[in-house]
Length: 386
Image 1 (tube, one colour):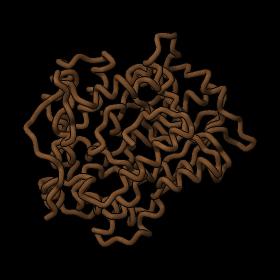
Image 2 (cartoon, one colour):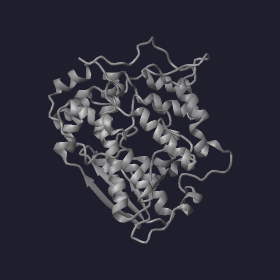
Image 3 (spheres, one colour):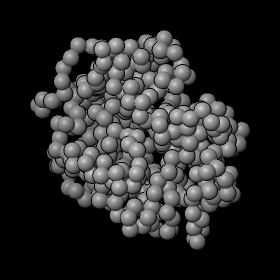
């Protein structure tokens, strides 16, 4: 049995947000405030609309200065947007379409979409100015990759999907000669996220080490792979850049849901990222039970920093288990059946000792130096963990 290198410490929770020692590497200052909320407030918000007191565009308008900076393509599309049926990606696609951009909406089908999410994608794809493409993963190979990540005991079992999305978007951009990818990622909602909960998906050595341990050949990971070299090639050779429109507005998910519902008949699928059955299982069942991680802490901590909820309200939410509103037995049985586990095997895996990214070969230091050098050369500020 592999013994994790993660430090052991007495339980402590941040005095300002609700991040706690479920991140083994969390650091607290003399006032009990953690490094996550401090970094969020002092550095990450500086690249968003929350850093200014100027008038900020509303959810339904979008950042005009950003739209005007996007070159119109000679082909059929101006931008690529990855769409999942979720609030963020649907909002970005709709904002771009309203701004007059010709949108290529790309959906990665990994076999875990909920019917509601798929309906949301199709509603979006029916709009004028939006063309829809889907990239479907080889299920048997992808299933084997997902089984390998569960067997490895790491928390980021969604990493294969996360990096496969990036690979699919950049392939589509290269194929159609598009130079701009619009992402639904945004710091206001996702700016507090410990690296040990979700390690860098571009570290191919880390992912391939997990597959190697499971006895899988590198060819199983090749269609998903989008490492630093692939990213550099896309940026320098094909001149593709990724922009984050939601960082340029004071984005409210509640307002966005209402707007999407009235604009395209968008339907809610439940909690954040629950447009995927597997993501719901990962964040609300697997991670809490195997690693003691409650993903809600990261989102609630960001909301506290932005004064959208009080710390007391956040603690009330966290008093209920992450899986409180789920039929846990059904979800575990469903995921087990799709991945060719028995329900007992999956339950046993979740009860097994956890591992972390540092328990596997990785290129964290090398990639960190490479990304920092790239930021210096391009004059960009660091707004992520990597």
